Length: 332
Ligand code: SF4
Image (tube, rainbow, N blue to C red; front, side, top):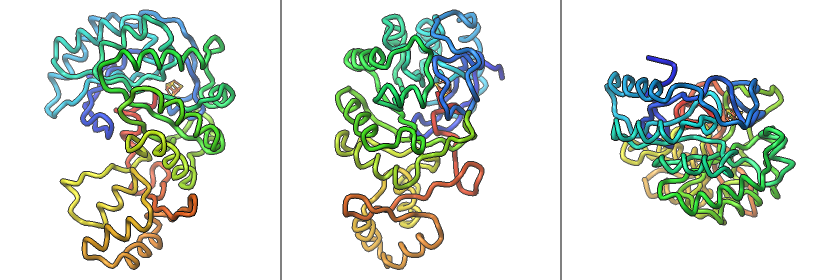
């Protein structure tokens, strides 16, 4: 397999996704403090040709041919920012017409203010963009953008794009403890996102080794708070992406496993959890106290209610699955 295409690999957001690596490491418009690829070596906003588009497509076709498993999306998810590639639109449309598979892209959205980028993104079926901060100060702290970028331009580009794009829009918000977890910041992000057309928002936490050693994932309390604030403005279009698999109601028959899978995606009020377990014929009090004692879940107080949430586990620890935190394998 070439370096320009990989997989398919499982992704909770995208199903089985075959990755396209259209940017060499590491050209990016950001140098996020949590980036799993390390600090950005080539911080740039200049769109350019990185590879011959025919070569990118040829590599994807070979990977598709070699794949024996199902493919849900062919996803641009390189070791940097994929919209830096000036041939992006051409590559996406060629891949789609040659393979017939839906195409997706994970972008940090920093260049979406450019008309040429929005035009290229129109060639995709699904666009997933990053939005970690609503205030300029927090944005500079967490994403460490190229000095020429302006957050207001990016917000305006996102608004314009979301009005025009007929495909699916996902948003990922990465929460870093004490950087973008303040209540005002969360409210600002939720408010901005509530005004654009989107399908789903994923609240993520860094679970792989970050570019900066001091980076810590948001804690369970901060996740419950963020989830509740987002849900107030965005309804049920909010999910946690914390490393555990989401619920698959067709596969999970055991009520306790099923509850654990739901709690990995949505914090649940304790009275609802009681009700669910009781309906399954279990003793809710005993089941919940056993799960709390085993450290699999945590109880959090928020606005006079008690919530249950799946307890976060550090990367590498038993039980965690981190393969789909941001699509096939990267966090762009
Ligand atoms: S996380 Fe994505 S956007 Fe941020 S520096 Fe890494 S590659 Fe760039």
